[in-house]
Length: 376
Image (cartoon, rainbow, N blue to C red; front, side):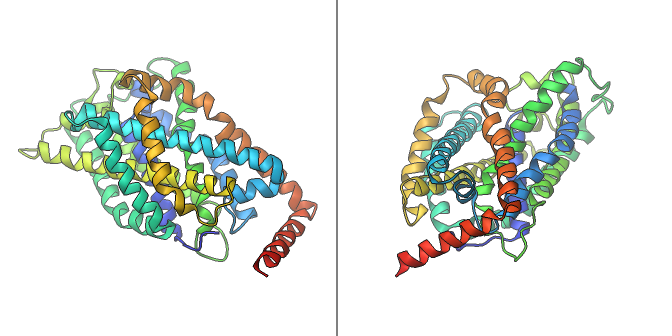
């Protein structure tokens, strides 16, 4: 078990920054109704987020892989752990490629993707080796600044817009796009925060705060809502769900004296920090999964190799930015459903049944006896 610990504030910071990293680089979809999608998705996702928190509270001190093995047993549990590890590996590669495409198209236009990947790989390896506690402290430090920049960006965008009712009427393109985009938005990025189930076993405090997922996501979406409204107003005449990186495009259209280029630099730096949080979370999850599969004593041994593998997969994942956007919006919501929704619900139900039947305590006692015998 990881002896590092993070506070509730740091946990909320990690969740919020993860959500922002996905939203600010991509789009919520459905054009002018994007703000409505965020509100509906926020409410609809609360039961799912409480499910994540309830699972962690039922098995305090255990991470996702421990819980899977307890609930499903060693054989089936090992198979599920392998599948989840592959899922987090793939997710990390997708996040890496998203940032690569953003850098190539919007900022570092002459920098090859491989260079961006190498830099991220080195930094993430260092962060994961430093441990969960360092990751949480780092996020807590940057959280205030990133929050300020995000809110300021949204306010500037709203002030600069010429049509303050540009987000109306609601259901501008009909009901179906809103419904489809709402589910897609829950799958990407809200439900992705389940990746933190692999590290939130180290939340400090005697009683695990199971609503930490709800707090983090709702705060992140409240701030993101300001930005999304501002982006929609600035890009009023275009359907911004068809644009690549709409937030960055909106920033380029702002006019604040001679500071336009500096604002672009701030936003680019912010998006790099947010993407780094996303990528590191997936590296943590994958390294812990690999350590559990091969019975390594320490997950940090695999950080460099896992980071290199994620970057390598990211480089060959898509042939174009368009293919990346289509995957995120059309395939990911269905592909991720078993991992982010179906399996957590199954784990919760199975765990609750074990607790009610009194089996959980016996399992924990058996594990403690086995550990004591190994120590002898």
